[in-house]
Image 1: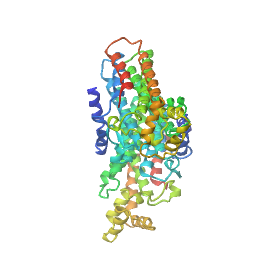
Image 2: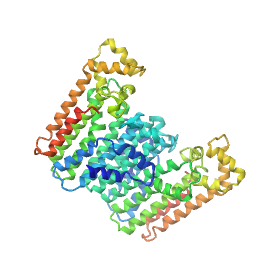
Image 3: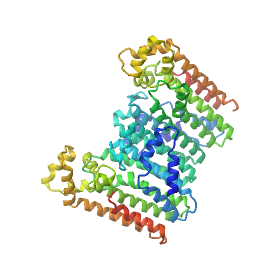
Image 4: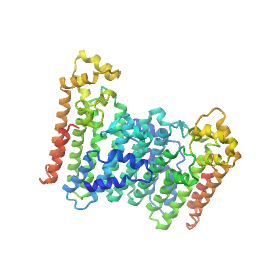
Length: 311
Length: 311
């Protein structure tokens, strides 16, 4: 992973000064590097002996970072990875264009890795992510969103990159198709678990721990599962509270705390975490046919971390 | 080119309704398709017999369209290809995300074309374009911009894609390196000529003909060559006019007409067009070693069109 970090630093460089400054603000020293870890672990577990997977791992982190930059512009977010969001420092136009730079750099890195199959996986994933983001944008305030469509959105916008990260690692290592499929399945379920926990943490953690503003989803009236479940489970007495705070987005001090209380009282938060736990289990089960060993253990630990984390 | 158009229409489709609607608004029935024409012509002239270049040509148009969508958000432009800019209809977030979708689709098409060398050229071009856009963003209002840096910016943000479009066509046709380099050279010079004329037209055409607002560059105080030359060539009597309208951007009715008059009086407009003419000649000269024939003639005509057009 240190070698991957080296590649990331090397490839975020540019003669145009704003680019490394903005990229460094977001990338260097922060971020959990979960997705590149997934690529490297999958490749190693599938028997990779050379460093080709490192370029793919760096590419995966660049795709992720590019989507973060564009997401924060789209959502007007204020905080990211414990720092002021880049668009508030350098402006939205710079965030959009540096996102484009990182996205292009990701494809340069993939070309460097030399695997057309890996390129196909990550190009497709990039497209699916964009589709997921657009779908979320158009349905963000739809409180009649079904759990099915919510899962479809988070599979596309989040889990697809986890799936592609694991799959392209396996493919680049020359693993047989059923192993590649198993690692893709693992990544997909891990990604869904990860996003479910993310959506729960927005109602149960604090900004300092999260590194982004807790309560952002509530303030934006974003149709995430904890909110959808809480609204469905509260009686008619609370109907007016949700209509005012979520539908009309007229919020005052204490409303977010009240929403968090209702999340807990109705069990909406726990139901979301339980669903995440199920996906984490399913992720681990997908690796059943791989030999026991340090790499499989690392991926099991990653699944446990995704659901036990508090940030 | 009809087959390329078919590919473009097919690949802008998506189950997420906003995507084909927004893409159709920008792509279908409008746009000059210069860049894909360049890819197809270069491939044919280099001896291509199959349709692999069509996927690359469609990919090139998608990269171009993605940058238009992001550019219009960055510049807050109101008009594009004779229509209201997409971000004013669907919002800036949708424009950013559909741009990402088209960019990813471009790479899916390139994977489909199956040439790693073409992928390398277009991935690099995408990165150089983003660098050029960021450089332009940071220097947009710098009236001390040298002609050298101005040319560096338009080479990166515009001419690089023309160069890559021609080069990848040649590469995909298996042309020898010197032929690929010659077509890259042609594309680069054509692209510079094209952008110089674009910057001149902003002071010498009208919105209806252009399909975008004439005078946008002046209203934004954008440091393009016609403006830089006009400011350098007007005497001290006009100093105050430029300081007020460009540096302070305090403009009233008639200021744009006055600026256009000064462009003509000082010869700034003609000097820009003369420089463009030189680049167009240089583009044609780069093709000297190719056999005379219909494809070379088409590329000669394209160079002539780039400098004689009024829109």
